[in-house]
Each structure stands twice: as structure tokens, then as C-alpha cells.
Length: 432
Ligand code: SDX
Image 1 (cartoon, protein in one colour):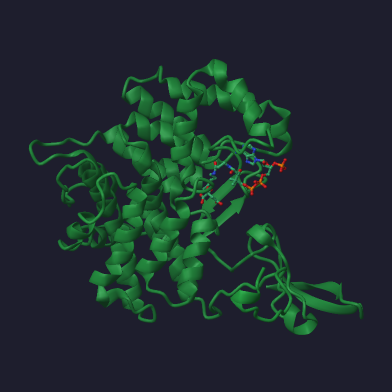
Image 2: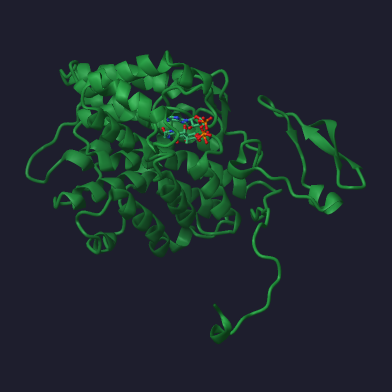
């Protein structure tokens, strides 16, 4: 991997240091600065990790300039149109598309773990009914480590495998329970004759008093959405999972930390924020006012669903979601959806505005997903939960890759200290 060296001259003595440069299979080369502090007494400084590769990974590749996203080498648009979420989970976890027999075994192992411990319902009953479902998900997911002691040992390969299956299998059940609890409705058990995504929609919308038939077009749309959200290299929540996992914390606690990080409006919480923004805009004629606010440095308002740390081109997931949005609205006979009209006009205006062009701000994965969810009758406070269901596949795959990396060690960044220099304690009677 080491192709050449990078040199750096540091300090008053102008010491010249050489660092190995590694080239991956795609994307930017990296400079290994592991020895920098030992050799120079200097740290690097990169708040927000704008230029920092935190790890080596073979799971997902993103080219922000070209708007490219691939899982294990497969283009996201191909997977979204030809694969299904269960197959993508297998691909992310194992690195290859499964043969039919492998796929059927994987699906049955997931189905057989979709139930959660009956005691868990009492944890839910401890939350106020008006709790944000993400608050419940953070707590409920971490609590899985209290129930499943036989899959906590991260050094045991079989326990890691079982934990991975449990986390992917149980997330939709926990999510649907959070929704039902917030509505004061009875929990619906998983039905194994349904596939993963249809089963989730059934747990979400079915009631015990009558049969509920899952709409196949909506189930396919949700499955596509899950594929698009499954992984995205070292984003904030995945980095959170890796850092938590690097201390040896149990897998359920690590993914719960990822759920907490995803909740932020700058990250996975943006899909909920997009809908609130579109509803606040309310009418196409108000768009210029909001565009002006988004460009005003003194106004904290940002165009939610726009911009991305890595994509400086159209997010390829947003392109697929735009098509899916039209398919869902057509299926539900909602082509005149006002929010979609505002979103499309907002996109048109922003993409021709020099502020957005100069900063390469394009619609991201969150821009259209909320419109689809709203059309499907899903409440906005559940949108980030849906993102978490899908991203659990990526978090688990990235966590597994990190744990199995022989070079893995606890993550412990340093800092640029700008606080007080040494000073002596002053008794309270002598303080001003
Ligand atoms: C996700 O990392 C991932 O991969 C995340 C994700 C995944 O799959 O895991 O892709 C999912 O989180 C998508 C992003 C969802 N978030 C939003 O839609 C929230 C709105 N977007 C912004 O908050 C912002 O674009 C970020 C947080 C997404 C990216 O921020 P950066 O990379 O730190 O960029 P920045 O804040 O330094 O912005 C650069 C410039 C600034 O202007 P100047 O100081 O140069 O004048 O662009 C401006 C920003 O003010 N800017 C925006 C803007 N986003 C950036 N201005 C108005 N509206 C916006 N949305």
C-alpha cells in the first residue's frame, strides 16, 4: 500500500520528517502521520475532520466531486433498482452478494430474531407518550444489552455474528413499537410470512382488530429508501459507532450511540427538518424570502436537505429518491402534493443561485425522503427513526470491520489546548 513518502519540515530546528503515503483501491491517497507526535512533538489539527481519514475500510466508497456512492463496489443506483434491503445488508456485512441459498438462510436468521423480549414493553411504558421516538430508540436499543448476554463478547466471532443479526432484525420492531406507543395503540408483533420492509410497515400500521394489507408499491419504495440510507462511509454517526466500539463497549451500546448522533439536525435529523422547513415556506411565492435567509450569515436558518460535507455534486441518493417520490405520489394519487411542488421549485431556484453554486450546495439524501414519508402517513418525528433502521446495517458492518481489524486500537484524539496556564487555588474568602 505504501507508494511514496510525504515530507514535512517542522519546528524551529526545521526538522525534516518523512511519512509513508498509502494508496487505496479508489479515492485520495493518505499520509500516515502516526509517528508525527513522537518524532516532532506536534499534533495535527483538523476540527470536523475535513482532511482526516480515521480508518481503512473496504465497505463503502463515496466520491463527493463526482457524486458517486458504491457499497462493496456496486453503484447505489444499480442496487436501489435491482437489489433489496436484505440482500444489501448481507453485502455490507459479508462483502459479496449472496448466492440464493446464502440469501435464504440470512433472511430466515433475521426473521427468527425479529421479536424482542416481552419485558421490553415495560421499558417503553416508562416513557411519556409524547416522547420523541428517537429518545425511545436510544434507550430501547441500548437496553438490548441487558437482555441478550449471549452476544456481548466482541472477541467471540459467533457472538458478533448473532449480535449483528439481532441488531438488524430488531430495529424495525423497536421502531414500530415506539410509534405505536406514542399513539397509545397496541404493539403489533412481527409476521414472518412478510419480508423485512413489508413486515415493518405491517407493525407500523396494522391494528389487532382487522387485517392490514401492506401496499406493495409503498413497501418497495420503503425498501429502496432503506437501501439508499444503509451506509455512507465515515459519517458522524458511523464514526461515533466506531469510536464507541474502539473501547470494547458492547455492540448494542455502540449502535445506540450511533442513533444518538444521527438524531442531530445537521445529520440524520435533517429529513424531519426538511418537512418543517417546507411547511414553514408554505407557498412557492415565499421561497425567495427563505433563500435570502439561508444566505444571511446573521440568520441561523439553513436550507435543510441541502449541502453535504462530502458531496460537492448532486447526492446520487437524492436522484433516486426524487424518482421514488414521484412513484409513491402517483400510487397514492397525490401528484399535486404541495410540499413536492415547493421542494422542486426550491431546488430549481437554489441550483441557479450563485451562493449555492459557488459553495456546491446540492440536494442531499434528506431532501425528498420526508415528502415520501409524509405521503405514506408517517409522522415527521419518525423520519430519523426510519433512517436509523436502514443505517443500522451500515453501522453494524462498520463496527464488525473495526473489531476484526488486527490494527484496531482505542480511538483517543488529542487537542490544541488554549485554556489557563498553571495557577494556584484561591480560597473563597479571597476571591473577588
Ligand atoms: C446527512 O456525512 C454524511 O455522509 C451524512 C449523510 C449520511 O448518509 O450519513 O449523508 C446524511 O447527514 C446529510 C446532510 C443532512 N444535513 C442537512 O441537510 C442540514 C443542512 N446542511 C448543512 O447543515 C451542511 O450542508 C452540512 C452540515 C450538511 C455540511 O456542512 P459542512 O460540510 O460543515 O459545510 P459548512 O457548514 O462549512 O458550509 C460551507 C458553506 C458555509 O458558507 P460560508 O461560511 O462558506 O459562507 O456553505 C454554507 C455554509 O454557511 N452552507 C449552507 C448550507 N450548507 C452549507 N448555507 C445554506 N444552507 C445550507 N444547507
